[in-house]
Length: 86
Image (cartoon, rainbow, N blue to C red; front, side, top):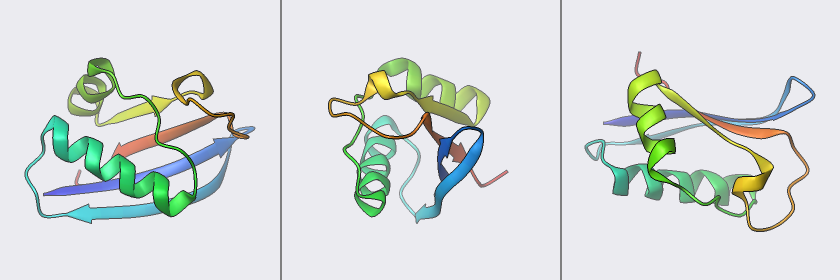
């Protein structure tokens, strides 16, 4: 099961947040699919996901996507994806 707390941060404050849940097992593919749905709900483009993002999510229970990870310009400091099953 995947339960993700996603937050868009700007100037140290949460601008938008959501909880995403799926009963699929945790894998790179389900992580990416979850991220696509989260970004769609925030009405932002999906960032480029590299292996390190998924490794950080698995090892540290969170990962950050900076503006340089997005193809289009974004108006926030970073997107945090955090495991909410702890």
